[in-house]
Structure formats: structure tokens, C-alpha cells
Image 1 (cartoon, one colour):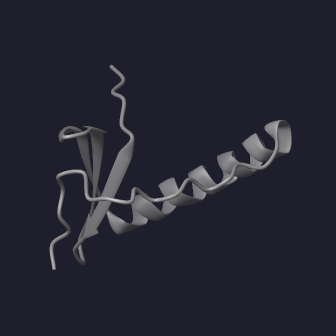
Image 2: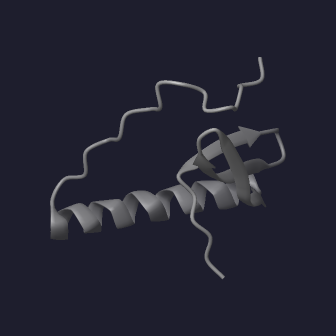
Length: 79
């Protein structure tokens, strides 16, 4: 089953990476999925994403980086 997410947040400890995928539509947002993976698995995932983005851009052209949202949209970063 697939879920739509338009924002992702990454947190980590020494032992694991936590990837929260959120569907934000102001004024609220919903956690669509949370993945918890080991640092080694996270690094393999990152390498696979970089490789696939490269293949995508070779086929369809360069992807421009999206701008970060101007507001917090109801979420606040922990300090």
C-alpha cells in the first residue's frame, strides 16, 4: 500500500535513523509512515536514491531543488 507524503523529517540516534513521512495540508498534517533503519541500511538507501536520481536526470533532464516552506505549517522543530 502506498501513501502520499510531501514532507520528510529525519532524526537519528547512534543506533538508528528515523524517517517520518508526512502529508501536510495547512493548517494540519498527518504522519503517513515512519521508518526506523540502522545506520548501515540508511547509507545503502541513500546510495540507491543518489544512483536513481542520476539515472532519472540522464533520461529526463535536471531536477531543480524545491524551496523549503516559508512557514512551519503547524509543526515546530525541537531544539
